[in-house]
Length: 302
Picture 1 (cartoon, one colour):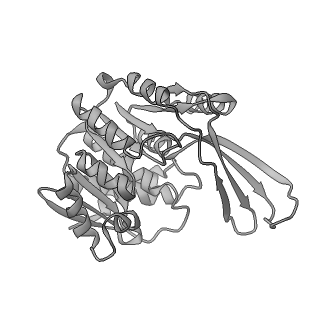
Picture 2: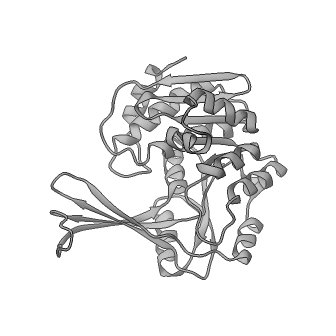
């Protein structure tokens, strides 16, 4: 079972308009709503790839009820901790002229100390083979919330995969998690002078079990105490890159759920193929399975 933590769950609302004009009045041609947040995207991809998932997070108010219902309708098992504040929404306005999206992200509801304790108390550690944590933190939670979860998970012999950036990335590494970030987040945490390979090694030196860094069109890097691997992309893919990193996290979490010491060359093959296949889909959390299966054996790992 892959547990996916989305501490700042959202209801993603997409409006389709003919053309977006600042200061203008717009007729909405279509509205789409579904549960969102990076951890939810990870859960959707992992489920699509055939893995059992359990989505974990906070929900509150009418918006939270809609989020919980949509997860159920999508066939995702969820264990959600109720809060007093209203679950946030994100609004994307997509214009039909060129398909560009303008996105508005609410900060999220304030989580109280009692609600954070309740979340910990409800964690089903005995059911989990791995815990994947990703996405922003809502107001009220400590900056080390993810590393705190990693320590609790370690106490229950559950490995963690944490997708984050900045000081939280270093804290997650020090807590012994498998850490995942993109190259920009890596450089933000460690400085621009390091290569992606050296930065991944540095995270392992800090204590990370492994580090997986997505490097945009240049591919992907993984490091642990045994070495460093770089996977080259199969081809340049045009589309929506929003969910590519989440697809990578899903593959990494699935590999660790199956083995605490996975073959990282094989993990990178799957992760690169899944990330590229996610770019082909218009919505984060979806992947093009046919493309994934076609590209996976073609990825070259050094």
